[in-house]
Amino acid sequence: MGQFSRAELEAEFQLFEDRANTAAVTHDWDQWADQFAIDAEYVEHAMGNFGGREEIRPWIKKTMSRFPGNHMTSFPSLWHVIDEDTARVICEIDNPLRDPGDGSVHSATNITILTYGGDGRWAKEEDIYNPMKFLESAKGWCLRARELGTITDEAATWFDRMGRF
Image (tube, rainbow, N blue to C red; front, side):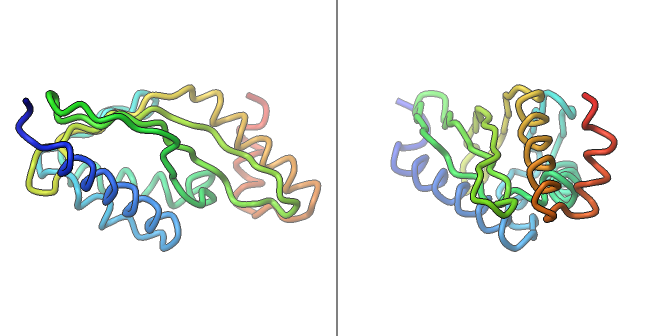
Protein backbone atom coordinates (compact mmCIF):
# COMPACT_ATOMS: atom_id res chain seq x y z
CA MET A 1 0.00 0.00 0.00
CA GLY A 2 1.32 3.42 -0.96
CA GLN A 3 1.71 6.52 1.15
CA PHE A 4 -1.24 8.25 -0.59
CA SER A 5 -4.71 6.91 -1.27
CA ARG A 6 -6.13 6.38 -4.73
CA ALA A 7 -8.77 9.02 -3.92
CA GLU A 8 -6.12 11.62 -3.07
CA LEU A 9 -4.11 10.85 -6.21
CA GLU A 10 -7.25 11.01 -8.36
CA ALA A 11 -8.31 14.33 -6.82
CA GLU A 12 -4.85 15.86 -7.29
CA PHE A 13 -4.74 14.66 -10.89
CA GLN A 14 -8.11 16.32 -11.55
CA LEU A 15 -6.68 19.56 -10.13
CA PHE A 16 -3.61 19.13 -12.37
CA GLU A 17 -5.86 18.85 -15.43
CA ASP A 18 -7.99 21.79 -14.33
CA ARG A 19 -4.92 24.00 -13.82
CA ALA A 20 -3.50 23.13 -17.24
CA ASN A 21 -6.79 23.79 -18.99
CA THR A 22 -7.30 27.07 -17.13
CA ALA A 23 -3.78 28.19 -18.06
CA ALA A 24 -4.44 27.32 -21.72
CA VAL A 25 -7.35 29.79 -21.68
CA THR A 26 -5.90 32.54 -19.45
CA HIS A 27 -2.22 32.18 -20.48
CA ASP A 28 -1.36 32.58 -16.78
CA TRP A 29 0.94 29.69 -15.91
CA ASP A 30 1.70 30.67 -12.32
CA GLN A 31 -1.03 28.53 -10.75
CA TRP A 32 0.11 25.60 -12.86
CA ALA A 33 3.73 26.05 -11.71
CA ASP A 34 2.63 26.47 -8.08
CA GLN A 35 1.36 22.88 -7.96
CA PHE A 36 4.94 21.60 -7.97
CA ALA A 37 7.01 21.13 -4.83
CA ILE A 38 9.76 23.66 -4.25
CA ASP A 39 12.34 20.96 -5.10
CA ALA A 40 10.31 19.25 -7.85
CA GLU A 41 11.99 17.73 -10.87
CA TYR A 42 10.66 18.28 -14.39
CA VAL A 43 12.06 16.03 -17.11
CA GLU A 44 11.42 17.36 -20.60
CA HIS A 45 13.28 15.13 -23.04
CA ALA A 46 13.56 17.65 -25.88
CA MET A 47 14.18 20.80 -23.80
CA GLY A 48 16.07 19.60 -20.76
CA ASN A 49 15.57 18.96 -17.07
CA PHE A 50 14.41 21.59 -14.62
CA GLY A 51 15.12 21.43 -10.90
CA GLY A 52 12.64 23.10 -8.63
CA ARG A 53 9.45 25.07 -9.02
CA GLU A 54 11.31 28.30 -9.71
CA GLU A 55 13.13 26.73 -12.67
CA ILE A 56 9.90 25.18 -13.96
CA ARG A 57 7.96 28.47 -13.79
CA PRO A 58 10.00 30.61 -16.23
CA TRP A 59 10.44 27.68 -18.61
CA ILE A 60 6.69 26.95 -18.85
CA LYS A 61 5.85 30.65 -19.18
CA LYS A 62 8.34 31.10 -22.02
CA THR A 63 7.34 27.88 -23.77
CA MET A 64 3.61 28.54 -23.58
CA SER A 65 3.83 32.24 -24.49
CA ARG A 66 5.10 31.61 -28.01
CA PHE A 67 3.99 29.56 -30.99
CA PRO A 68 2.94 26.76 -30.95
CA GLY A 69 2.36 26.70 -27.17
CA ASN A 70 0.25 29.85 -27.16
CA HIS A 71 -2.03 28.37 -29.83
CA MET A 72 -2.84 25.25 -27.75
CA THR A 73 -6.40 25.44 -26.46
CA SER A 74 -6.48 22.75 -23.77
CA PHE A 75 -4.62 19.75 -22.44
CA PRO A 76 -7.17 16.98 -21.92
CA SER A 77 -6.02 13.59 -20.75
CA LEU A 78 -7.23 10.85 -23.05
CA TRP A 79 -6.68 8.20 -20.37
CA HIS A 80 -4.86 7.82 -17.09
CA VAL A 81 -3.84 5.13 -14.64
CA ILE A 82 -2.94 5.47 -10.99
CA ASP A 83 -0.19 3.49 -9.29
CA GLU A 84 -0.73 3.91 -5.57
CA ASP A 85 2.48 2.08 -4.65
CA THR A 86 4.67 4.66 -6.43
CA ALA A 87 2.29 7.66 -6.02
CA ARG A 88 2.26 8.04 -9.79
CA VAL A 89 -0.33 9.03 -12.33
CA ILE A 90 0.50 8.05 -15.89
CA CYS A 91 -1.57 9.59 -18.66
CA GLU A 92 -1.78 10.52 -22.32
CA ILE A 93 -2.28 14.25 -22.83
CA ASP A 94 -3.67 15.75 -26.03
CA ASN A 95 -2.29 19.12 -27.17
CA PRO A 96 -4.75 20.52 -29.74
CA LEU A 97 -4.04 23.77 -31.54
CA ARG A 98 -6.83 26.28 -32.03
CA ASP A 99 -9.06 25.96 -35.06
CA PRO A 100 -7.33 27.58 -38.04
CA GLY A 101 -10.77 28.55 -39.35
CA ASP A 102 -12.18 25.49 -41.06
CA GLY A 103 -12.79 23.11 -38.14
CA SER A 104 -9.71 20.99 -38.91
CA VAL A 105 -7.90 19.42 -35.97
CA HIS A 106 -4.15 19.75 -35.51
CA SER A 107 -2.81 18.00 -32.44
CA ALA A 108 -0.17 15.71 -30.98
CA THR A 109 -0.09 13.73 -27.75
CA ASN A 110 2.44 13.00 -25.04
CA ILE A 111 2.73 10.54 -22.20
CA THR A 112 3.10 12.24 -18.83
CA ILE A 113 4.30 10.54 -15.66
CA LEU A 114 3.45 12.52 -12.53
CA THR A 115 4.83 11.59 -9.13
CA TYR A 116 2.90 12.98 -6.20
CA GLY A 117 4.83 14.37 -3.25
CA GLY A 118 1.97 15.13 -0.85
CA ASP A 119 0.40 18.31 0.47
CA GLY A 120 -1.13 19.10 -2.92
CA ARG A 121 2.27 19.22 -4.67
CA TRP A 122 3.78 17.17 -7.47
CA ALA A 123 7.35 16.00 -6.85
CA LYS A 124 8.10 15.16 -10.47
CA GLU A 125 6.74 15.38 -13.99
CA GLU A 126 8.22 13.62 -16.97
CA ASP A 127 6.86 14.19 -20.47
CA ILE A 128 7.58 11.63 -23.16
CA TYR A 129 6.73 12.36 -26.77
CA ASN A 130 7.89 12.39 -30.34
CA PRO A 131 9.03 15.97 -31.15
CA MET A 132 8.52 15.27 -34.85
CA LYS A 133 4.79 14.66 -34.25
CA PHE A 134 4.51 18.07 -32.58
CA LEU A 135 6.47 19.63 -35.44
CA GLU A 136 4.17 17.98 -38.00
CA SER A 137 1.08 19.17 -36.13
CA ALA A 138 2.28 22.79 -35.92
CA LYS A 139 3.42 22.80 -39.55
CA GLY A 140 0.06 21.38 -40.64
CA TRP A 141 -1.73 24.09 -38.69
CA CYS A 142 0.45 26.79 -40.28
CA LEU A 143 -0.14 25.48 -43.80
CA ARG A 144 -3.89 25.39 -43.30
CA ALA A 145 -4.03 28.78 -41.55
CA ARG A 146 -1.93 30.30 -44.34
CA GLU A 147 -4.35 28.89 -46.95
CA LEU A 148 -7.29 30.32 -44.99
CA GLY A 149 -5.62 33.67 -44.34
CA THR A 150 -5.80 33.18 -40.57
CA ILE A 151 -2.14 32.58 -39.77
CA THR A 152 -0.74 34.88 -37.10
CA ASP A 153 2.45 36.82 -37.75
CA GLU A 154 4.18 34.86 -35.01
CA ALA A 155 3.14 31.51 -36.49
CA ALA A 156 4.18 32.63 -39.98
CA THR A 157 7.62 33.58 -38.68
CA TRP A 158 7.91 30.23 -36.88
CA PHE A 159 6.83 28.38 -40.03
CA ASP A 160 9.31 30.26 -42.21
CA ARG A 161 12.05 29.11 -39.81
CA MET A 162 10.84 25.58 -39.01
CA GLY A 163 8.84 24.59 -42.09
CA ARG A 164 11.84 23.09 -43.85
CA PHE A 165 12.33 20.46 -41.15
